[in-house]
Amino acid sequence: MMQSAEVRPESVPAVTPFETALGAEVSNIDLSQPLSADQFAVVEQAFLDHLVLVFRNQSLTDEQHLAFASRFGELEEHINKPTRHEQYEKVQVFSNVKADGTTLGVHPERGTLVWHTDKSYIATPSLATVLRSPAIASEGGDTLFANTQAAYDDLDEATKRRIAGLKAVHSWERSREKVGERPATPEQIAAAPPVEHPLVRTHPVTGRKGLYLGNHASHVPGMDFEEGVQLLAELERFATQDKYVYRHKWQVDDVLMWDNRGTMHCVTPYDAVKEKRAIHRVVIRGDRPF
Ligand SMILES: [Fe+2]
Image (cartoon, rainbow, N blue to C red; front, side, top):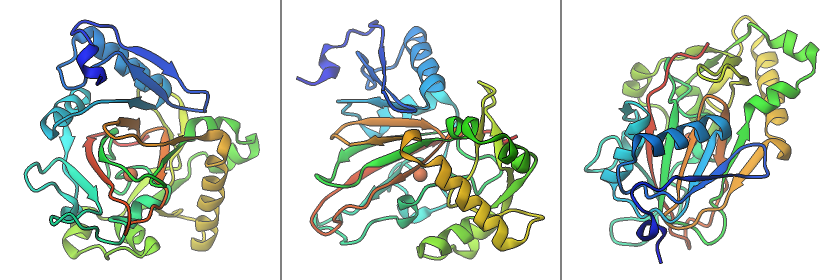
């Protein structure tokens, strides 16, 4: 039986942290219904404590998905128009399934295969991302999350001193080049010109510091270009060691949400010819990193 049928409207959600560096499952909750203030408070605190939340067996419509995400703040659309939902402009669809039911044969968005934090190429990157999974691959297509706050904490003091005060330039155009995706269009470049963010950002609610990197990060201003690229790569390798990572193995009708202010993520490849995978995505507007 679906979990949603068993949950009473005023049930208290249960939060079960994973044994990994981040992530927790929230159960005894039905996201198809509006959450009470008390229920939402439990979810919001778990989100701040664990950075990644998993809700299983949530069969949502796009409207319900949007309604749940909007409890966390204002929603925003994406500059990548080819992935926009036909009906709901604030829903993106990452799917390799064509309208006739056959598969595209290629991964729908190569930029998701490399470590990144969502929309760091704009001045006010996404606070959180909320995904749901109408269709999953039987093998591959896992989403990996790295806890960039735990990684920052573990850096040696010399490295912390070296990177304190440094910035990185984040660029949608450069990010597309690096992964060999459809090049950024002039319209996209105008909508998202390169922007600088601190290499170490402070979470505006919890005050924790974390590395702020990923594929959208291009180079370090004021530093030799290649040297900056190497520094970013070195820090990314450090932050994505297994001990900082949670691997999400999808089930149909998962809802998965994460805090972009303290994490990076990527998806593992799957057989885009044989497998059918569809993920719907909604993002919540964030603040300027500091
Ligand atoms: Fe992403």
